[in-house]
Amino acid sequence: MTRDPANPAAEPSAPAPPLALVVRALAFATLRHTDQRRKGRRAQPYVNHLAEVALLVSEATGGSDAALVAAALLHDVVEDQDVTRAEIEATFGAEVAGLVMEVTDDKALEAAERKRLQVAHAPHLSARAKVLKLADKTANLRSLAEDPPQDWSPARARAYVEWSRAVVEGLAGACPALEAAFHEAAEEAIAAIDTRAAHPVAG
Image (tube, rainbow, N blue to C red; front, side, top):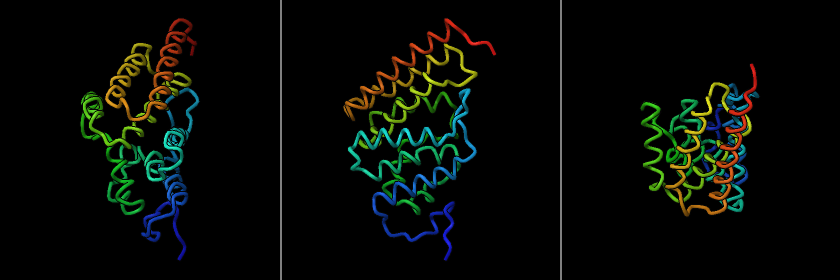
């Protein structure tokens, strides 16, 4: 039988070895996010963000948690690509699906309510989901510093940093190294925002 890489659910359901699980998640995420781009001037492929989050998670866990790295690669497929929990579970198992869903917002809610709930829910995430959330927030602030959304004003960008800090307050103790990386990214983002505000680029 010829297997369709866009439909890994058709593959055998036996648990995959750690490396195979991660590579399968990368292939799945790459295919699902193929046409998605970041909102900065460079319009980078969205999968770049997923790879960065997965790398941060891998480093934070010493490469010992393949399911969490797989979840890092898949953490936006439900929100952005209409993948269901059932599809993730059938393809990658209940453990990965559960981690993805812990960090998935309910897109049926208004944006302001989703943001409020992220702050409220952060302290109640599992220890592993907290590591994933920290990695995601760190990568997002690094991106905000380096290549921010083109239509964001300095005020909106600063508000995003402060909201991210509020979320991360609820993740305290999950991973000191990642927390330090996040706080460094936040400072760099604020500095970059202030620099851009002082020296706006025409066009």
